[in-house]
Structures are given as structure tokens and as C-alpha cells.
Image (cartoon, rainbow, N blue to C red; front, side):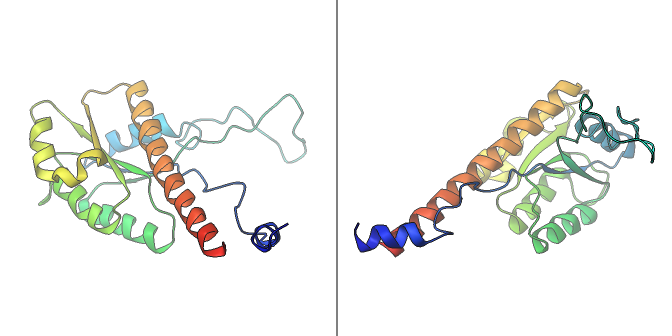
Length: 198
């Protein structure tokens, strides 16, 4: 066995088997609280005030035929651009970034959803955005020109009124895309480490 092969074998942290943890953190911003909460209920039905399918008393133990149901996503809902920027900044400080966000285009504030996404992408360049918009708010072409060619792959949109399935699919697509990008970065880091060891 060569020295390089021995070194690779002996490096316990050389190539972790598990890889990066999937990111299911989602930010929702809408100046109408009922819309933000509607999106939260779709993405986190067990944590949005609904009764859990399993109700344990302090005296009963879980049985083998019952399973805990965990939310697929972790959702933070805010209603102003300042709150959104603070949430993203805090998430980055804690090393718990959001994978994506649902952004209302017309926020009723000094800043609309498109300008907000531009500012957020300057804080977190890897976050994906889905604009929640009425047909008359902004056209797809105008959103693209405002965000710029460099952010072409960072956003999508959904029209109001939206269905539960549309929200779920957009969330799953965006978080999966975030995970794929992170996996690619992780694999490149491991490859770089391998080259250094060799």
C-alpha cells in the first residue's frame, strides 16, 4: 500500500459519508398576515395550530403502530422588509441559512418584494426566491430585468390565488435546488482536500 493510500485510509474525516444536511428552512414575507399564515399552514400543517395526529398523555407510551409526524419544512413568517432582512442576517450569523423564501411583490412598504430580494441576495447569495404575485403586479420579464442576469436561476414566481399543491411544489423544488448546489460545493471541498492530501 502506498503512503498516499495509507494516509487516505487513516484520515477519519477525509470523506464524511453523510454529506451536507438537507436545508428545509423557508422565509415567508407578506404584509397580509393571513396570507403568510396560509403558506405556513400548507408547509407545516402540524405546527400551524392543527391538532397532531398523535396525542400522548403523560402516562401512555408510544406504540409501534403509531409514528411521529414531523413538519417537512421549518418556516419563519414576517410582514415587513426590515424583518425579512433581519431574519436572513440572523440566520447567516447562526449558520442556519434559509434555503428559499416566498416574497410578496407588493408589500405596501417603501420597498417592494423585488428590491427586497436584491438586498437579501447581497447578504445571502445562495438563497432562492419565489415571488407571490398577482398578474397585474409585475411581469416575468420586468422581474428578470430588475434582478439581473446574474440572478437568473435564483428566482421563480407563483400567481395569486395559489393552490396548496403549487406552494408545496415550489418549496420542494427550491429547497432541493439549494441542496444540490450545497452538495456540489461539498463535493468540491472534499476533492480539494483529497488533492492536498495526495
